[in-house]
Length: 264
Ligand code: FAD
Image (cartoon, rainbow, N blue to C red; front, side, top):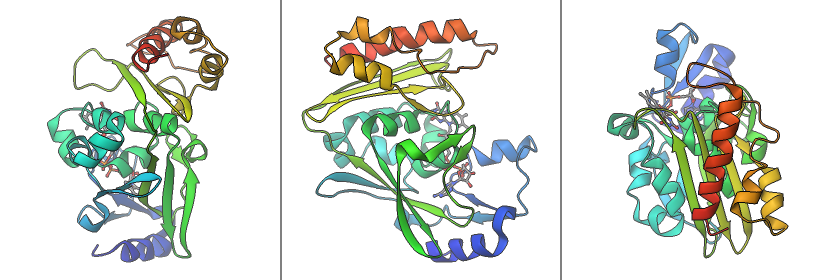
């Protein structure tokens, strides 16, 4: 398509039969497995006007079509939210980072993806555009259930607004078998003048923000003490990479390390 409005028109016309295609690095594998069989693919990849990183007064604005690599090397992202740039640079391999987009990563709703947990911990806001204009959705309200997000069938995610925490320290930890893999478990912690945020990757059907760990930090616990709460409220699945108990143990270890790096 040639514009965001054209994409929204097609979504309104075709409803659930249509699927947006951004970098294709999550949707195409699903289609190959016949887990997604859209009648119409709306290719938003060419919408380069939705690929940008800009600094606004209170937040970093990232266009939904911005590719992981472009975030990883963005001077603005590196200076104002280095955690975001760092994590974007850890996703998959160079091919994935040069095609995959931040919007695709969020809208896919995969709890094993890295950026959703990071954006939860940072308290980001997502901007959706539909036939009736734009609305903001808080990251904490966006991830509804396994691979399901709060967008309506005729909405396009256009922008991600990431608060720029002052004097932030942060840690990002990801356990993988091979460098380019998805996280078996991952943890992110960010501590700044405005508070503490802790996110968990692959510890349940949706990306999680660990309010139990955050509360412990706020009440004065050190990293090791607060990390003991990391498995609270999680529902990880068991698979060939590890049992539920193993993942919960790893979550406590990774949260401790992330908190230590964040200066807790
Ligand atoms: P697409 O595949 O094009 O779309 C994904 C979904 O989002 C589709 O349902 C699509 O309709 C919807 N969508 C896309 N853009 C929008 C929008 N603007 N508005 C509304 N809906 C939209 N991810 C990680 O986090 N960590 C990893 O380590 C990692 N490793 C990977 C390794 C491999 C080999 C591969 C293939 C992928 C990996 N990924 C990883 C996933 C990668 O980050 C994907 O690029 C990303 O999840 C999806 O982005 P995309 O642009 O390719 O989306």
